[in-house]
Image (cartoon, rainbow, N blue to C red; front, side, top):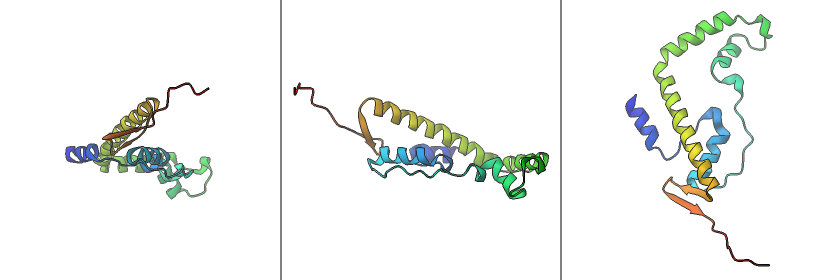
Length: 130
């Protein structure tokens, strides 16, 4: 587990599927690319607990779903994948730190931060041109 976390920290960039738009923005900032903003948002129905519910009860109304059964299966999956979930939580924490850093850099005039090593700025001309 600790090796995987260290590898995550050393990666110049990684993205999170369920935060795809943020992942793209961070990738643009990290590699000084302009990809254009994609409007794709992962369907909440295919992530986590909702994915289990939709697999077991596709297209059924909420009152027809056995929530106890879905919870039992979800809890068993979480138990069997606890290291994966812990790694995902750590990835979320690192990703949030990088998003916060990007926001601070943008507020301070940084256009992008190539490979998180070289800040690229566009300095304005302070002369009065009136």
